[in-house]
Image (cartoon, rainbow, N blue to C red; front, side, top):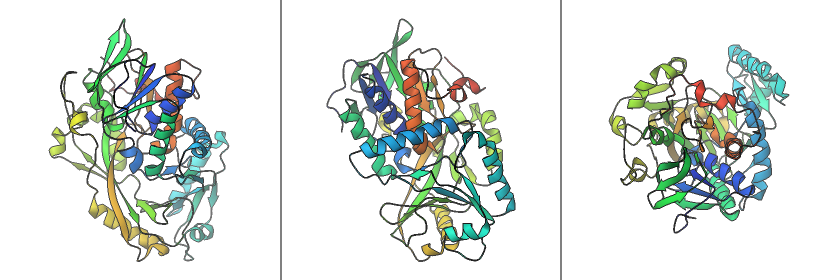
Length: 427
């Protein structure tokens, strides 16, 4: 998919080949803009292809809901235009409730988003058990959203990239962007390891790498990365066509007949220098998740997402680490699998086909950053998806394209502004 040489000039340069960057490229190309997308490794090589594959409005932060509603519309329009079956479908998503307290929390969320007139509904214990093939009243109930969707990330991201290329986007894989150039106070070029590409605007959509990139420019954003572990099973009996969430183990039936299985919010955070700069901003989140987030101090402190400085004629962390490929937490996954087999009887005796992990970029409030970067007119960020960017990505791409073009935005961008963070520091 890579081009042999980087273009000398484009209207817009995209930094990062995940779902946000590819989606922004598709939108801008459809508007007649010339676009080049630069990916240091391979398209969709990191979290965009390693996630669970859920495309959900259910349990979404109300601040994200308008953008998520638009994103589902884009998914419905775009998926049929892809050149491959990516497992996309409107199958509904269900969140099980272990007890009455959890049922009350689900109802509170439903009340909080009532203005959006969603099709979510509450289920009683018998109906919740029936969803997963039980009859022992294991759950107090559930909440179900029939209009929610799912797809296969490993198939969808490359197919989206091919759609972008077919619509005129230049895609350069294995080509890291080292920095940006300004002229007359505005962005004028990106400097890649293969040379300079002039541009009128640029979008930084590098996922967990965005903070590292911006720190080299003297800009500090509150963005940290956590490691999330996932497994998939061999083919198994149908439980439910759509994803099912529960506190101990969430599942999604895959196109290959197996199940993707993981545990919500169970992750490992490796301490790095930026954690101390932004500690105050993340403290409320850490207090909420302290039982399920593992903090670790070790070699990652000096790793690729740690502190780094470079000039544009030097090899960067992006070139030394083309793809973030963390080892999965096997102990955690063993426990998740045991829980899944207990919750979902059809999974008993089903073998594991693969385990993997991904690096999720997380903001203090767990909603994205989509904004023009202060001090760099024409330079925009689209990152901080906080573990739910697969579903939101097409909407993020469209909003970023609107900001680049100066169009009336698809939704109010205020909730995604950088200025909402006290620890944000511009150059």
